[in-house]
Image 1 (cartoon, one colour):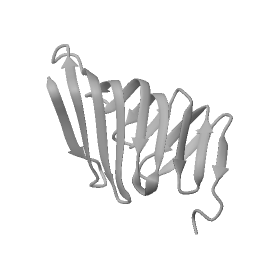
Image 2 (cartoon, one colour):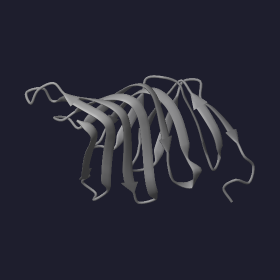
Image 3 (cartoon, helix red, strand yellow):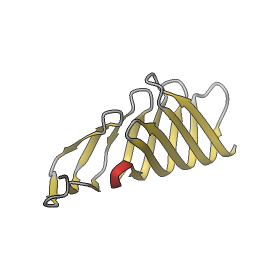
Length: 140
């Protein structure tokens, strides 16, 4: 499929949409859809969260997306994040990276070896070699 689109709503009524330049499912018996040029938009209470990646694999049965390669995330209040090799669980709205992470938020800049995140709660856990550069007075 060229310019594929998948949309829905999670258990809390948050809308989401995933678009792709191409989506290929080998057969209806195979629950995996290979995605090229993926962009996901999650409608969170605090504002939209946008995730972009070059290649991913969407599992129709488990509602998970596995991304190989770089991932960029942009969220409300100037939040941004870059990492690679990420597993997304769309039902739980969680993500786990397998590669290094860097990013920024109101408080400052951060980096670590990997991360895990709860997108509903806007909670990110930096794992291994975590560093944070705090901007004084940024969150007053």
